[in-house]
Image 1: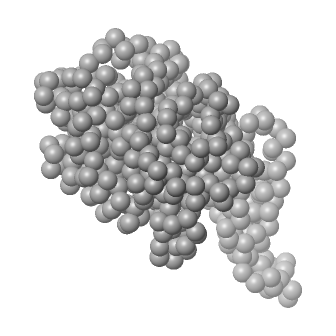
Image 2: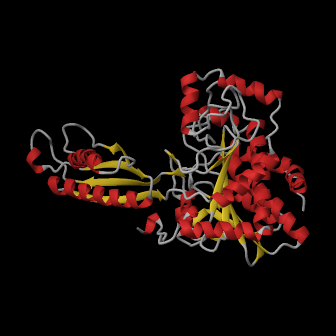
Image 3: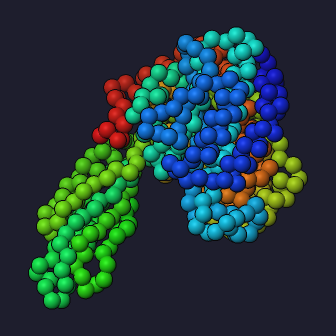
Length: 461
């Protein structure tokens, strides 16, 4: 099948995909609460011939599957929103509902729908050409909390994949070949003995003292970890009134590092600090892992294939109305703000940052570099050959997780970027079914990069 025919299949389905993306945008649901969002996708996928597999203890994640046998090729999608990002489709900050309501500031309404659209188009190709193999769309909950895919993998749903791809909304159309930081999100809770702080302080055992001593120990730990380790924390419960010895206190930590092993070793030391704080204050400590994820192993063979198809698609096709709307946002950015975002997303020096919208494919220059963020697709990259790309879904210089990106992911800008991504994803999936030598090379690269490494879910560590 010619790839122009695959593009045509996406275009034939663009109204359905656009309506789905906008429905998700208008009804945002946060991590682990994406019941309507996941059901919308499942109902549609069933209607076009996919079988749906539920995942134990994971009610808002699922797998849609078509075909049988090898190879097994996957594409991941997400649909969770962010809290406190409700925003109207306008260039002034104005919540759609209230400021505390969620919004799609990371574009997951587009991410999930674009990946789904790619899978549907490839299913049509498989039917027409009688292609052998298994196609999977992974509906993934809770990426924003970095818990979704590690929780899914407790059921070993990625283990038998021969390759997997994904994409993410951004302000430019490029390939991501950088890695991301592995991380753990943890809460430490201390329980002490309450007492009147003035009348009987000797009878109290302060849980807040334990938190503060833990934080002091963690700050001393910073001197004795590798430079790239990041330890962030916030006290989420510091007790009640000053004249009562706090019986309960809680502190929330993130630990990030370039590799999972460094996260593990740092967390072990942090746990000892927490135990020591409890010992010093005669309190009790409990520990809860909220989320954890791996760094990313980009597969360069798959990346080259994706870039080949990105150049073939060439452009999201933004028009003068899209550009005018984008300019309403970009004129609000200072040069310093814009440059900071370009730097954080590793935009190459050749990237034209004066344009309000990126209407062409940008050759990436991030191979071997490390982005200072985390994503749970890293876990997938330790289980199968994996690569991801980005598509322009909001104006140049705007960061994700902002009211500005939220305003754009519900417009034609976001939807055109999504359709561009669907075409790139569909042609790449098709190639993986029809170019066995490329798939074999991707597998060989994966085996070399993961030699001697055994994946352990962060929730099993």
